[in-house]
Length: 287
Image 1 (cartoon, rainbow, N blue to C red):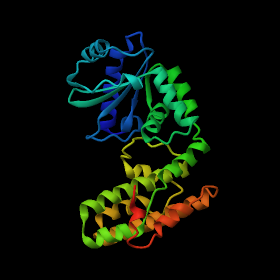
Image 2: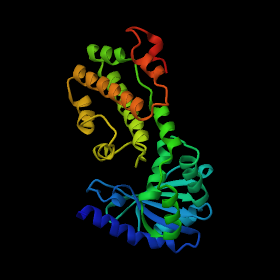
Image 3: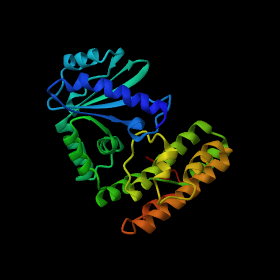
Image 4: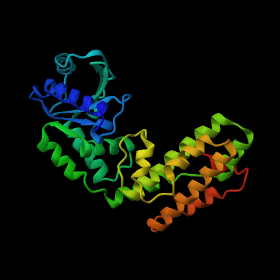
C-alpha cells in the first residue's frame, strides 16, 4: 500500500470516531479506491456512514465539526431515498461522505441481489458494502458482505439485457467519415459503457462506480471479454476516427458473440438485426 493510500486510510480512522460517538450511527466504512488499495494523490476519501434513523442536518454538522472539517458542502436533501451526501476537506484531502439509513441500504442490497435491479448506482453501493474497510459496526457490515458475496444469475441476465443496446454499425461509420467528432465520441462513450455493462453481467462483477472509473482495473477483472480489452477501449478514442469506429464495431461484434456463447438462452436476434440494418435506415437509430 503506497503513501497516498496509507495516509487516507489513517485519516479515515481519525474521522470515524466523530460519527461513531452518535448512538444513531451503527456503522462507518471506507469505500472507493482507498478501500481497494490503489488510491493515488488525486483520490478523494470516500466514507459511508450508516444510521439507524434518518440523520438530522444538525447531527451531521456536529459530526463534521468534531472531525475538524473545512469547506463543507452539503448536497440537496435526498431524504426520500434514505441517502444524503456531503463533501469537505480535512488536512487538505477532499472527503466525500455518503449517509444512508440501514433500511435504505438493505433495500438497495435487496434490489440488486434479490430483485435483479441492473442500476449501476445501486450495484456500486453493494460493491462498497462488500469491499469497504469497516471502521465501526463490523458485525452489521459483515452481514451485508455475506449477503452480497454471490452475484445472482438473474442479475447477470438482467445486466446483459439492459446493456445489449448497440447499432447500427453504419451510424458509427457515417459519423467517422463526416469527421463529426462531437457526435461520434458521444456515441463511442455510449458504446463502451454498453460493452462494459454487458461484460459486467457475463462476468458477474459488481461495478465499483456508476461512472465506471478505473477502467483498466475493471477490465482486468473481466475474464470473459474480448482480448486486450483495456488497450482496445483506449484505442477507440486515440486512433484516427475511422479506425476508432472500426475498433468499436469489432468490440461490439465480439461482445455479442460472447453473450451468445455464455448466455445462450438470451435472444440476441433483435440486436443482431439492428447492427445489420441497412445504411440510411433511420429507424435503427431511434432511441
